[in-house]
Amino acid sequence: MNSSNVPHIDRMSNIYNNSVVRFYHYVFHDLSDPRTRDWFLIPSPVPGASILIGYLYFILSWGPRHMEHRKPYQLKNILVFYNFLQVLLSFWLFYEGLDAAWLRKYSWKCQPVDYSNSPDALRCLSLFYFSFIRHYGILLRISGVYIYFLAKLSELLDTVFFVLRKKEKQITFLHLYHHTVMPMVSWGATKYYPGGHGTFIGVINSFVHIIMYTYYLLAALLPQYQKYLWWKKYITTLQMGQFCLAFLHSCQLLIYDCDYPKWSLILILPNAMFFYFLFADFYSNAYKSDTKRSKSTEARENRAAKKMANGSTENGKVD
Image 1 (tube, rainbow, N blue to C red):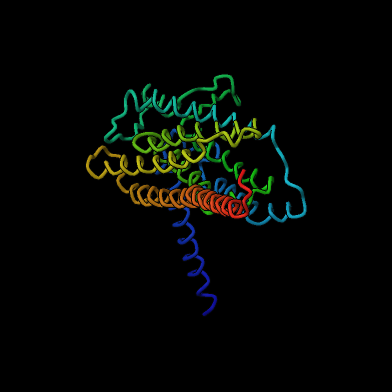
Image 2 (cartoon, rainbow, N blue to C red):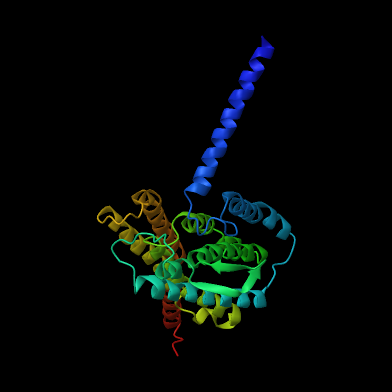
């Protein structure tokens, strides 16, 4: 009786395994853009997920334990170089996003993904070519959307530097959520929808990052003048504004139909709202609290000065 069940179990196992393999192949190969599906880190979600898991493990566990009895690293030269590269990269992404798409060919109402190999589609997909990089005679082509994905991975170093410099207060839930979600979103865009309506978010995000990393560059390069960089809080205002724009721009998919997937709104709209409220809460805690503290300190100083003045008058010691 038991032996007769073995072939049945094996057959069911084979059916299950074949179904899982077919489903995996369908989701991560058949549905993907054939132009990007074989690019580095794109074929499977495993490499990217492994990077994020390693990132979170370092930030939340290994890194703090490693730095517990060590002095914080200064990393000035590394930070200057890193932030300078991020400014250049963000500027290039912003410029190319506008010049190759949004200021020329794209509709601001609703823009589908062009999956063809036409010159316009390829410029959006492959904004520039490294013709000098070849591997076994194969030209390495790099997409603007793909570079945006790689940029999001490189920004994980923001948090790594916080850990090494023992800036734990800056590692908030907002920071971790933002740096974890953005690589996943940009990976999906590169693999399935490299172009079209969704790239608007990347363009405005790149503009915000030009301002943000310029601030970080100046703060690292000239730390003695950091208190004079008065526009730090306005970076948070810009970040809140970008999610308002992303929300409103994405809502147009509810009105206009251009074959860009409407189901993407299930992911985009809640995340845009969530990010907005997280940044608004950060702004309130970081800047409005500072304003209240400075006003209360000023009020205490004024009261102390009045008491001293009254005391001096009563003692007949007015100068």
